[in-house]
Length: 192
Image 1 (cartoon, rainbow, N blue to C red):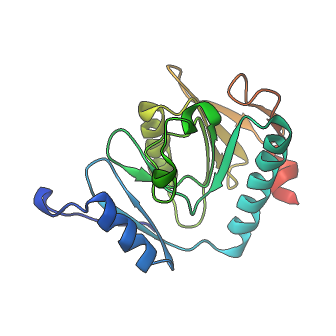
Image 2 (image 1 turned 30 degrees about the vertical axis):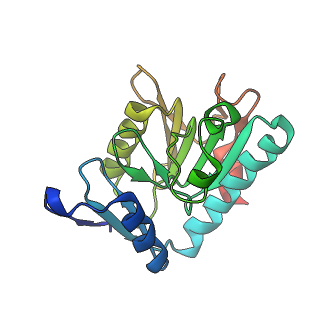
Image 3 (image 1 turned 180 degrees about the horizontal axis):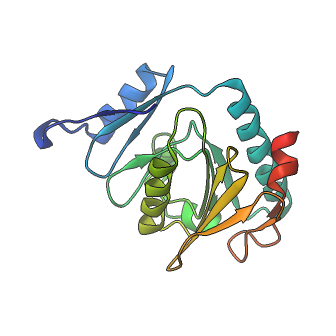
């Protein structure tokens, strides 16, 4: 389960302090919500990690051909417009958005919102927490998000200004115009 650490407004971590805190605590996953609370999760079990590696590999393979952005994993943090710092399980950010980020900013938690995110429901998460997180991503500028739930064999698809759509794993996911030509067969990807 995720532990939420609440701080009074005058004790919120600065961006530099947050980065240093995360660097000093690499054995846990740390994010910050829009209210300044730190969200601390244990490392994933190996089964979930295998799934994340497969998802990232599929996106990376497409991106090597498309060459229109960069892929990151859950170790990379994004400073979002609402002051949260999020580390999606898998994310893709276009070269267009990356062009707005200084090289120094890329060495830390960069001030950029990914275009596309994948969150995988693991033993550390609840569906409600991740659904809320996906809504926050959209409010911050994510254009498309997939919340993959291996327990129910369903993917919740999040798009701007639309209600989430729930699709069975058997149905291939289309990334529409966000990642042109990228499709994902979730069942096959998670089984590998």
